[in-house]
Length: 140
View 1: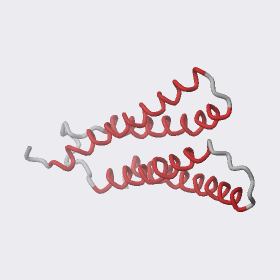
View 2 (view 1 turned 180 degrees about the vertical axis):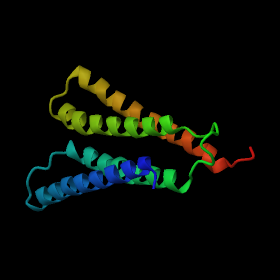
View 3 (view 1 turned 180 degrees about the horizontal axis):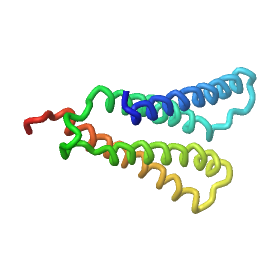
View 4 (view 1 turned 90 degrees about the vertical axis):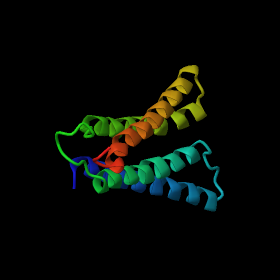
């Protein structure tokens, strides 16, 4: 299993555990009829869907669609690692800034959320660029 795949999968598992703990906290708060911090719900969904599911898909895709040859131009390991970094920096930025901005809105924090979204979307496009040549085939 490639190193990048292991990083994606281990990070996905960490986000799954973290989002499960946060989801459990939110459910317990509702069950005890405590005030549920609404700013944590989007964080929960992002950790679960982007942190766990998307990283799991990216990691398995890098593993299942291997490059054809080391010297070929369709091998882009640096772009694949940049995808990992952009996705995780963007997600961590969102996990930290979104509740902070929800509790104490400040003008600069909104731009950090925009930066977070840009990093996550860029990671998605970098993934497509990296995987496309692996799916397309050798002869083209």
